[in-house]
Image (cartoon, rainbow, N blue to C red):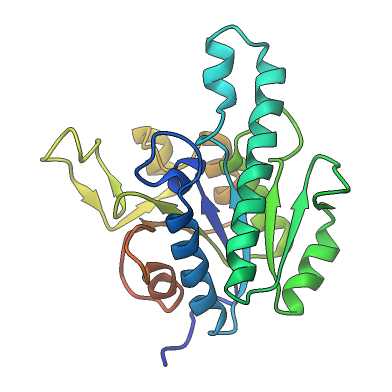
Length: 238
């Protein structure tokens, strides 16, 4: 068995990743696949925390464009991440993976409040921690949440799970000549305006020298491959 090159990781999942081929909501075959991949990765002895988005249910920015107050729209988006987090928790626990959901917005009946030291303790006990509710503040994306939580819990890397196999110079679906990058520097991502993570998240990673690996989650087994150091996707670092 290959050994992991990371001790603690933050897996960033978009809400859209959970909807699979559906136009909206949660594809339970996809959540089951993610749960299986996480279970296999946990066998390597790696601490895993997850930050999940809510775009498959409601996206704050889109809501504000349609006339909803931006702060209210962002709070609605944060609530969508809670729904996704609970769905993923259910899939993980059906696969025998002990989990805890921690939320930045208090809701005692559903999840623990986010407490940094408690989250670290859960991971030390072998549990997967799912962070929901964003940062608890409007105007911040779940990309920024992933960067913030990763720095707070001392993660070695952010694994950004997407539907494509890395970062391209333009949309590879629309442009067949789009160039794939094997490795990028933080500053290049910012200068080129590449859609890796938002600028706040990239800046936070750059300030704390926290690498980001962007990879295709839809191919089962890729999470484990990234953790064991196989060269897939795109790595963003100093």
